Length: 149
Ligand code: CU
Image 1 (cartoon, helix red, strand yellow):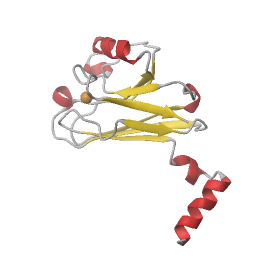
Image 2 (tube, helix red, strand yellow; image 1 turned 90 degrees about the vertical axis):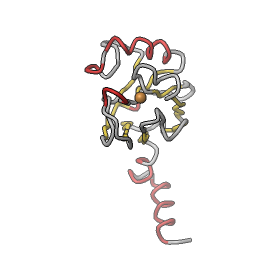
Image 3 (cartoon, helix red, strand yellow; image 1 turned 60 degrees about the horizontal axis):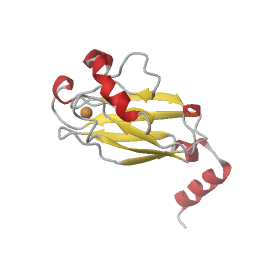
């Protein structure tokens, strides 16, 4: 076994930040074709903080092809997505005060990146969650599952 594999195994056994960090971030790449690079992401239920990292590999500006990442329970996400238009671009296409939304990033355009962190305690195992882009017209195709384990 290579040395670095042993180090990772030891870190996993000891529960060090090196091991925990791997399951406490949601890393997604979006593009000019209304896509995320993943349809399923997983985080650890024990994460003190969960960080969403979104990048946009395209060229189009936010007003034309903006993307964000919004997280809601799967039972809530479609209604929250439909209400997102009330927030407008300036409000990241999230309705103000929408308590169905657990976390969301800013809307970004091509070439940009954004991150947001939220308490891991906002998620629970056994509850299905959905991540989506709330830009009008995008959420029907830009979505996936968030699994908490
Ligand atoms: Cu989008």
